Structure formats: C-alpha cells, structure tokens
Length: 87
Image (cartoon, rainbow, N blue to C red):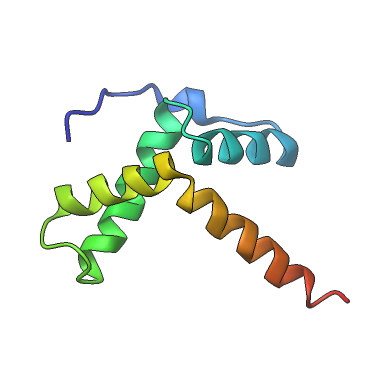
C-alpha cells in the first residue's frame, strides 16, 4: 500500500473530544496515522464485501472517499439520522 509505519502512540487520546477531533481531521483528509488506519480498515471492508477485486483496490477506494469528502458526508448523514431518534 506504500504507507509509512506509524507510531501507535500518536493515536492515543485522553477524552471524547480528542477522539472526535481526530476522527474529523481524518475525514477531512488530514494525512497521518489515523487516516491511514481508517483507510486500511475501510479498504478491507470494501474488499471483503466484494466491491473491489483486490485489497489494494479497496484501500484506494477508501482513500478516494476520504479525499473527495464522501466519507465525511456519510458521517454527517449518520449524525442527522441518529438525531431523529431523540426527537
């Protein structure tokens, strides 16, 4: 995948707000360990679901979804949907 090896310590957060900030930065395409891990995991899901013929292709599609803003848009849709349950 031609991705760098990251120190897992950079993924540690102290609280929910830091976790939220890391997730949003990742989905806003900020390069780093979090984005790479999200793309690898999402890419594996894309591959095993049959939407890509190779794992590398799945990872590429995941990076494209992040870079295009599609992944962040899906998160926004999920947030809006879940807010409907508390009304």
